[in-house]
Length: 104
Image 1 (cartoon, one colour):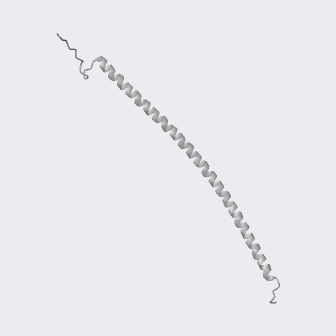
Image 2: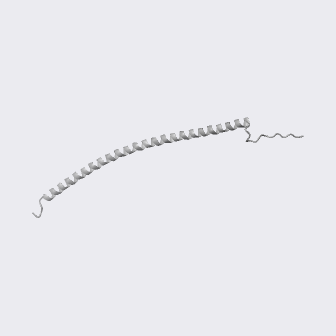
Image 3: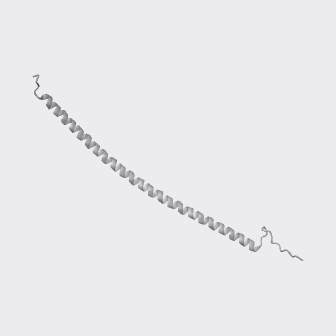
């Protein structure tokens, strides 16, 4: 004589299986919350990096603007110096033309 013991089907709401399902759902929920928290932390870190990068870009733009301003000042000095040199050259040229000529 052979006695076969059957398990109840999974759809049966037996206490132990119901508790197991709740535990499984809680575990999945916990792991999902952990994943969300990790992603939020990664997002915050990336936002910090972006903010630091933006601050560096602003700093470098300001430095470039300051250097461009200095270059402009030096270009103006060079232009003024070239104008003075040209004016001196014109004066010198005028002096050369006013010297006695062999034709006189």
